Image (cartoon, rainbow, N blue to C red):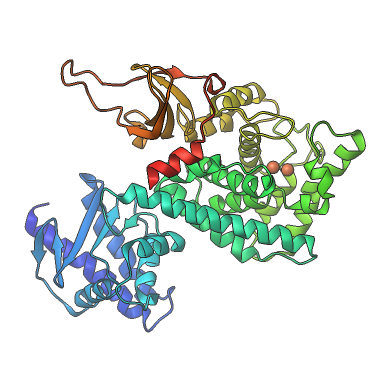
Length: 462
Ligand SMILES: [Fe+2]
Ligand SMILES: [Fe+2]
């Protein structure tokens, strides 16, 4: 495509977006006059991604700019589109490879329904994430990553509030609002697609007193990561995420001392615990916005891959395969959490234990998939570097390339640093041309004073 073709194609794309936006003022979203331009726009965008991962459109002084060159083929719908961008305060829109018609539709609806003017960029970003727009970004700046951590924290917090509210409602004999769970799971799913590390890092938050709440959100995030690695369609991913969020909601029907009881349970107590999947199934049945499969998954989350769990399935009973996704996420989060009767395993230790359970209580394919979703060195793993410094993994490699991101916490003599220091493993030593630091292997965290991975991530993100 030469420059002129590119210009006219871009003008066409923006015109189509503008046409859809204009018609959205007159017709519902499903109307062909809204939908068809977006489908055409999607087709027009495709050739651009043959040789680039993203396409950036900038609006500068009311003019549309493509890679630094202004485009002047103005029409009324093109002007309308740019006027909306300008009014909201969007300096640049980046379409990423893989952008879907749904992303375009949500984005146009966002432009249509956002009435405020001059919104700050972080606010626009957070709204787009909440709307579930994943392959359209609003700026391509270096600080994007930091913003993602802030946004992920906010999203995690929202989900936590929803769980707290839902469990409280059930305890008070009220039916929780399913729309709320659906909404926060969509936010988390958007964030998992956008920056998985930022979202996964938060699953390291293990609040001992509020175990059930954090556990519920963590299981949701972990299962969303697995669901995305599986490449499942959006509706199924959301269904799995909601199941993760509410999988233990039935525990609200049990006595609090029983849930909190440290150590081994008596046979009678265990019989009580075994009721929680059925109780959860019943509660979800009363809620709105809950998919039928989500209900089934909540009922089946302890049935186990080899069907030896509870409630014990009849021989001809067909389990929903998504129940196994919740089971691996549930197991991983439980193993990596400290409880009164159990020390917290490191991510690697947890995965090692889970590999032994693969094919028995856990689906072997999904254990592999969880490992892949978390990376070779999962976020939170302590590693020894070739410099003999010790660091904590704070991020997985981008797109599987390069090394993980590491923050150094102990110097070569084992002394803690005043503040964790983020290092780039790609950085090479100028004298030898070889990487300055390489990972030698994992480190037993018990050999070092305790470090708070959550704290490290927070320090680095600020
Ligand atoms: Fe459970
Ligand atoms: Fe659980």
